[in-house]
Image (cartoon, rainbow, N blue to C red; front, side):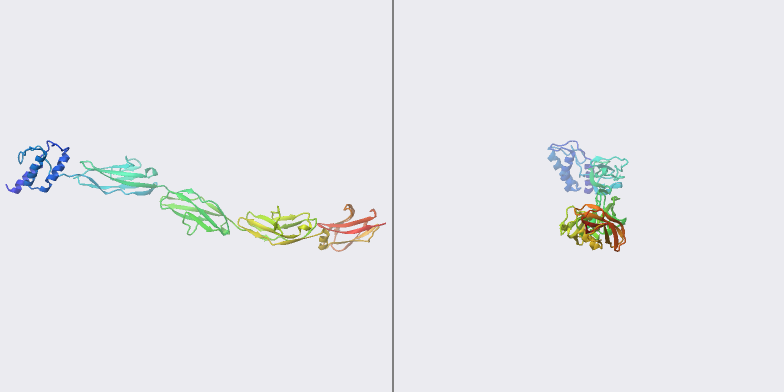
Length: 443
């Protein structure tokens, strides 16, 4: 037998040596194998080297132990090498972010150094084993499927990969699943009231959704460039009453906001200015203004001083006195601005001065009178008139004439025979006009 053949036979016999006793200081077969592996590994397959190392190894562990022969039985034996079998994760499941209602697939790829392995898989959700049901399938395979996912299934998924037909160290891999709900509006856009030329701004607040985008609509049409969560535009009068809403779109669905209304106010404008004139002392005089705008407020002024209580579109001066003469104006305001009227002048005059200025005339002939008088009357136009006789105390003594006058000069006869002699005034009244003349009666 050649030396190489001899070595090969010896190696084959050595592989069948079994352990029958653990020496002192060795706690397990694995510990013994590890010691033996480091003792023999430098020898490769050379028989002489192995035998020499075997003698030294056995003698070191059990003093006095005998090697009974090349094929004989020793008290223990060792394998020529030691192998640790493990599962290795080649491709772990990937973290994923999905929308509510979608289907999620988690896959793992693994390998092992164990020959002819049969793999086992167990998926866990937040460290709790998963079983197949209406939501989960493939919980004991390398691919886990989550159907119609909700936020209740968001979390950490772990897969344990093992070998079921051998003693092999398993491996684990973890993936995080994030579930995003569809977008919901947490704050709707609000109605806005602004003045013309100011900035009208609206905003919307949204939670949920994936890759959220915005598009604002005004009057049912998309506003170009309005693709943020807020919108601002310079207000014009044409925007008054405009309905605005926002369409929110995401990978997880879309939603429209409630509509909001834009109210655009304008500064007041005066369409008819107040008119001045002459106010009769003791009479009344009215100033008025016409203006356009929302929520208008008025304040009348005399000689640049505000008139207490004069806060309407009209201002009436009653029981006019000489002190009411002056310059008048009105200031009109609202939330969007202020405008002043033109300044007008009011002069004061007696009632008779006013009547005379209007074209009324009255003369009584003769002076002094006795039984009859002639009333010479002139009016600016056809009108009704009354001529009364008043004593010097202002008491009415009687009516000398009443009727329609043509507008030209008229002469009217009146009897004063029943009137006691004395000094009187004949008073002509026509509408708001009044004029008088003295009358003396003697007999």
